[in-house]
Amino acid sequence: MTQPAVNNTLSVAEAISSRRSVRKYTNDQVSQADLNTILELTGKAPSAWNIQPWRFVAVRNQEVKNKLQAAAYGQGQVGSAPVVIAVYSNTAEALDTLADVIHPGVPAEQRQGAIDGILGAFAQRSPEEKEAWGLAQTNIALGYLSLAARSLGYDTSLMLGFDPAQVKEILGLPTHVQLAGLVALGVAAEEGYPHHRHAVEKITQFVD
Ligand SMILES: Cc1cc2nc3c(=O)[nH]c(=O)nc-3n(C[C@H](O)[C@H](O)[C@H](O)COP(=O)(O)O)c2cc1C
Image: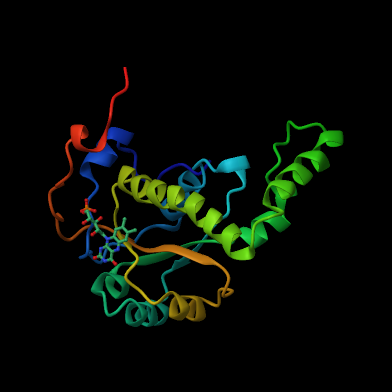
């Protein structure tokens, strides 16, 4: 795996605790090595049957970022962050390329059976249901991305405030894909808001 360019990576707990939505960025760049590491860590997210339906477009091009900013109702972090990543799922493509996700440890004579088993589980689902399923998996990767970035010392802003049809058109994505979010990525020029979260007791029932 690509080694992080920064040596002091945060623990998972430190990354979770220090992550904030950051909407102002310095002019510091995200190195290509760090970007690769962040995406490689993001791709370690789990998914049902290991189908990994998530796909990414990492945008540094200022002209394209400006267009994305307009599609995101003018949100400033889209135009000003050094990198904006579109996180989306393409379940149709993932199901067409299942041979890529069957573990190499599965013996050759069992591989087609494994693929057929997965395709059978989707046989009764409409294209829209398949894409909604893929989006649920991709949201796991979205969370991983924000924490992977933080662990390397970067900050992010996760966004759903955009017109998905416009974003797909700008990025040349097929209309059937589902966008999990736009993610602004860079070095924070502000602290963000302190966490304000429910207590565990409000969101959890313990059955002992
Ligand atoms: C899926 C998702 C979509 C969001 N969309 C936007 C957005 O469009 N614009 C924005 O400024 N913040 C957006 N946020 C950020 C949330 O407002 C923020 O995560 C929440 O208020 C908690 O603050 P924190 O991230 O600093 O802990 C989004 C967050 C998530 C997870």
